[in-house]
Length: 297
Image (cartoon, rainbow, N blue to C red; front, side, top):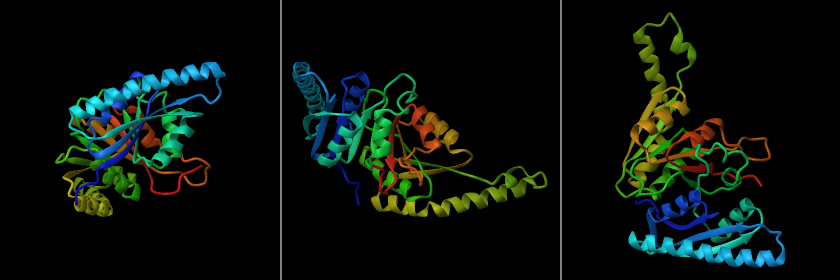
């Protein structure tokens, strides 16, 4: 079975350079024939009537210019996607989430602001809240796209979220590209540093815990096998943050995908600390997929 192709992509833009990176990425996604791409901009809800009319007119012109450039780029890539525009009023996050639901978006594509990877963006920003409050995959473009994703990396764990992430990434990949799954497993401290253990015993315990991790990842492997996606699994003992970031840098990955889970007992879902660090510090585009559960209001 082949991975499904994207049919509906929502791209909010504020006409900045970082938003241009997000718009440019669309032309290099393997979209389904006749896929729909919706470019949107959000205006403040409260503006003086005269100023509001001028802002609406100017925004419509600029949004159409962006759409025309994207249509041209899509034609150059041989895509047949349909590009439409939408102007909303209100708070950006609320407007984006409402339009995503009404449009039936399968992916929200955002640009990354700031020279330092998400250092400012993930402090109550639009992107942070779209991820926290929504239930859609969010692709964050960090730089100008020059081609399709060829070296995607997925940070995985033995949970349903990782299976959802790994199952979604092939929709963004160039057909035939290999997916790399990176999993960091723990060896309990007492087994790693206990002075009485011999080197042979250390090795045996490490193999034992690695084997346990491999068994937990079996459902993920079965899902990818069912999709017919070429992949390899990399398993390392240590902290997830350092292992994943080092691997992404060493391999020159062009996409890092990861899942986030909601913390129970709080009003809003919070990104886990490791996920937040990976999103902030990765030098490539980042795909964030929420757990397949009810999301907060």
